[in-house]
Length: 423
Ligand code: HEM
Image 1 (cartoon, rainbow, N blue to C red):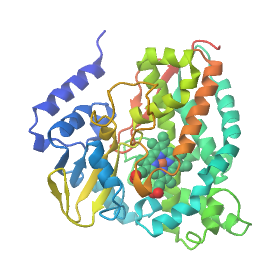
Image 2: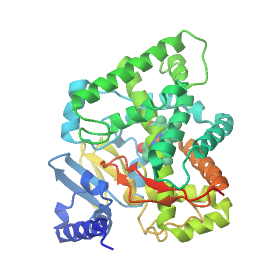
Image 3: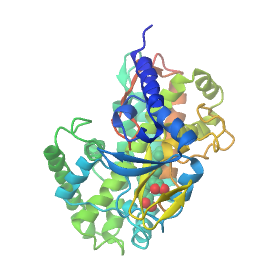
Image 4: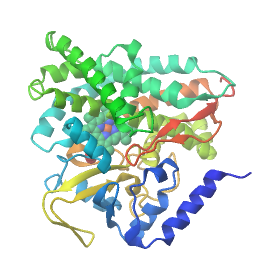
């Protein structure tokens, strides 16, 4: 059988290895969309682990690709500030943001403001709240799975991954469940550039996001006049460090929670079905021993690395890996590469659902910005798999996925599958 995707990857690998190392540039959404970026990171880890690129599309930036160097950057917020934004943005999208006005959120703040705002929203994902959420997520997961067709092809992203995460997020916001589909739609609007996902133009993106903010301002106004409750909007409206936020900061924090609480988990749910299909021996082991579900979940989070990078700005000159990063330079921590660093993870290219330390990965980051929702993400994934295993002996890929065109969100637009039979 002729597999065009394989040819494409072989070609990309040859091209990447033919370049002088100085010309190697990881900021290529086309390669991420084809899953063909891996040789870039393999080369950088081996030949130039702290690497400078002067990109026409993204401006100058440093790439940090080894586990220990990424840790050194992520855990040093004094030197590596988040205040100038935490993603490597194309110059085009930066110009668009400047036109629209930035929407700061606590992920792109340094202490003390970061710490105060993070503290305001963390109770929603505290263990006691997760205990309450667990049964609700299980009930919904069951309903979603019971509606799926048997023997007919369908899109797993649309019918399962988006559905479950939208339901959970609607609960966290106390947003009307009947309109939950708006949440992943807005999330896709925020993370895509024109021509990708649902985004057709910058104007359309601006209009839709203004509508989103309008809806949430309405909810804020309702909640601020009601007694404090346990949902995120009420927490922000009543929290001492957030109740005086302006509209832009409120919008920024909403964006953070919508993308954080949605895209990443959605793409891991899709990634788990894909990974297990590509590793049928591991899928068989999981079926034989469902107690492996939690470690399979963590291994998938490592293997998938739903957010490929986080970026920082140096506040002072800093030596890293024999290079001098100058004050003001942009620095990109490629988690997607750290998770495949053989110096930190044994046999990192393998997908193994019974690793001894399955949570040993960098997909949630480190330091003061480490993912606040990490336990909620694991909970949703664990529950959906427990419910899948009760119902379906297998879920089978019916074709290759369409991947997200992004150097930040590493995920799936579509994932065609068939469920041959019920258990
Ligand atoms: C598999 C799923 C997830 C992944 C891979 C993921 C990944 C990340 C990463 C890489 C960071 C930044 C870490 C750093 O800079 O050191 C982060 C921060 C954050 N995540 Fe997640 N996340 C996931 C799920 C969630 C969920 C379910 C929520 C919401 C309920 C959430 C909310 C947040 C928030 C609010 C932050 C900002 C924390 C801060 O700046 O202090 N994430 N996440």
